[in-house]
Image 1 (cartoon, helix red, strand yellow):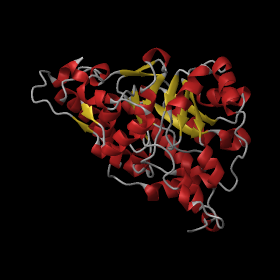
Image 2: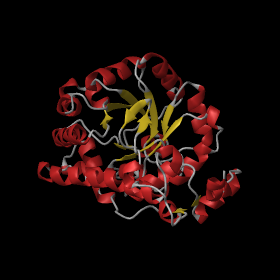
Image 3: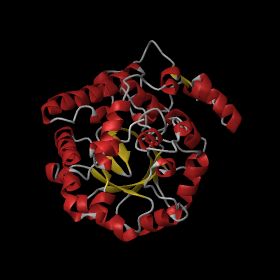
Length: 361
């Protein structure tokens, strides 16, 4: 493994470089092997499909958003500028990377606020770690004039990160205070390690109303941080956690009356992954690394815009093919979970067979 500090890169730039190197176009196995049941008579026009949804109570025209990536350096500031432009033109919500760097050093604040500058009326989410207090959360929201605040939880990343946090004892208490006092909707998100139903219940118990389960299959921050270490590596933690599909069935095993709004991200590679996530119960689905590949250079911005337009169009097409007029109707369509997910559900006491027979009522 390389110690990327030898290249003189800032940690945020290291993260971007390593994330780009990790990217694979193929869907994660749990997505690939989870199959929607094809029905030959959709009885629906494409134009009749309503793709709108909500994220943290905010209405969106598509069940899709650009998830948290980066910020804090000149290079990442240019990426965020391009993300802001994408949000402006496409009307897709955009989340910033963690603004911790801007709180520590106001000189880099512009590398985050540029998202809002380029997209003054769009939907923008600020992002901050769970170790921060209410005042820092308010500063993050103010910096981006954010419509909502993502609070990320990332214990495995912190453990492997050479300079990472080692005290997670106040995370849940911090989240509770932020939910109560920050003044905008709060989304608690994993960073690619997935969530269990127990975690979802814990978060709901302190008032969290929107959760992004963000499972494995995409960027692996344990692997990224391990690549930054010069000694005592954690290669055995690569791939740690639950897949996005497993995380969704875990969350959906909670009774609807007790369950927060669920978002999905982590390993989302194509429109079919998005539609499967929606069918599994997500209100909306986030992408990050696939978009990151397209916004590195200003010259690629046109390709990024085209990519998002294609994603939007194909979500609508796939929903029509499945006979789903809305995101809520997708949740009534039959799908057969992958063998690995079935095994997980059996071990965890989750009814996996009902997914294959939901259209019967």
